[in-house]
Image (cartoon, one colour):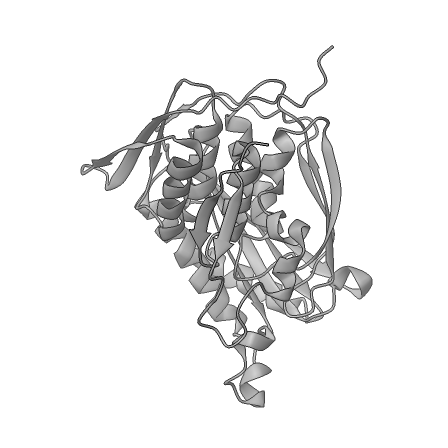
Length: 335
């Protein structure tokens, strides 16, 4: 029997990305020293479940499945650690379509919302399969912002929180362009999950079909984040006026730095380019984010795909080019 060669990695960072690339590249891995210096080393309870570890990259795995994916996911739908389900629906799915993913069957339905610490949200994710492979892109035209859309939500708090967030954020946007609409989604009862909170997801759509997003959530912090806080501090929620101003400023910051995607979607963009056929993909992004840089390194190590990176001093953006690894959907049924 042939000896299995493992790729050895260290640390807890980018666990989900590593699992995704390991699965799609058929590369066995061993990860050592997971939080070795912590009081409680090893995986956290929420990481022990494989499904919970890969739920964010699940959509990429689903594209290369044998049949379309439809799965119900439960837990936290909106928090400060990952893009929200609203951003996923308004922005992430649009990026996938750029690479030839069929629009039919690509959907995220929000059944109920859940914020930290107790969650209670529920969504249904539907992902079609790619018939053969993704489509290489030449995506460098950012265009100009033509409209801003958004969704605010509240769970187990007054709907006035949403109204105040919308009013304060619109106060900034309406100085710049007239086409601004932010919708409300107040949840009550079982649809409101198990913890109080509120938040907003904003997306700027450009004339060239780019979607630039930013979102934020205000809720009671997780237990590990409040260990050194007084009880009074734990119970305070940030004023909605401040939240509206901060999220509007965050979106304007993403727009200002340029690129065809925002900083939180750089990693996904690089992955999709790397999975494309053995053809050249060319993309433009703003300043490379730390996660984007780590994604480029993991793509090189797992897939052998290297990106040519060229700064564009005239715009402050970065242009990247690569030849995809030619990943094909070999598991689909051949008629």
